[in-house]
Image (cartoon, rainbow, N blue to C red; front, side, top):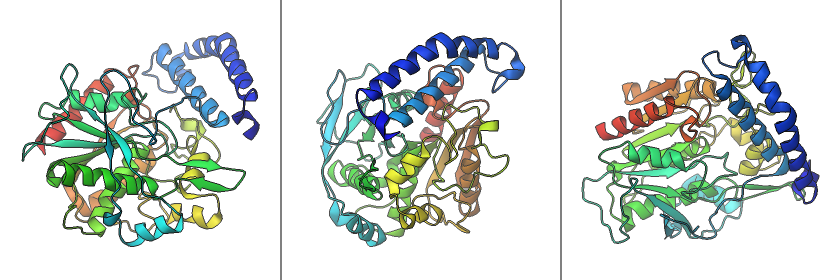
Length: 399
């Protein structure tokens, strides 16, 4: 498989995949999906079925080849029309306790990273803008299994960010952080930018909003999709467990299609993670949902000791069934948005139940029927996507 990460083998594989898909797979998917009984969800049109099958194939190709898309990353501010990028300085003085110890163990360096501001469509961005005392801001983390995608406005997941700000009347700006994504060096059996690198970057971004720009912490709403939701939970947990006078916890969280169990604890008979019952765009594998074999090992490491923390660390797997109790005391109000056709839906429901134990009605699960992982980034999932943006906007406005 490593051979397919290199040219020309990668290019040949991609060409063969495209030809096979266009000539054989798409016609087969269309014919197969005509009877409603064959569709992953009977409410879906044939076109939605074909789209899901195609996107699933794309993710599988990406996993096999080590990535198909070249995205901006932490090394530079990406350019483009209506791109409002800034540099965020490292904040080592705010990294404490077990997270600092872990950062030292993996040899993590503190570096400045980019972030991107989103404003409503058609509105101008002012680099000299100063927030008012009661102004809310959304602090956002993109998904991608901690190994892919970007905070840049051109990224395939950026419609989630833009959709949230466009559908939240009293929200003027949204900040998306270009945290360092993890990579796996299989030959050397080591991870590049492993945990807690992304969390340390998230702490720096939070410091930027609070102490550099002057946003009031209670007016900051953390938002993330998939792995980004995992990161939002980890940042909130860190700020609660490590009280810092200059960095109080945020006022709310929006968790979109969260990835909250990096272990295999939800891979059980009848699980949403198994291929037999999956309608998701993420391809199930015997190692867990989607490309989790690569993602998990890139994020925590390849050794048995490294992998064991996916089953015991609430910062990494707050929904892991092997962890008896995961506290959510003093967590802010939270909205969880998910689709019931997701591979992750069982773990999401576990997270919701655990949060309810400590938070009661301060946590809400908005579960949408017959939609897939990160559907809010996919225009093919209308009207569900717009309905979810409106729900999120109403929830943020009511905080």
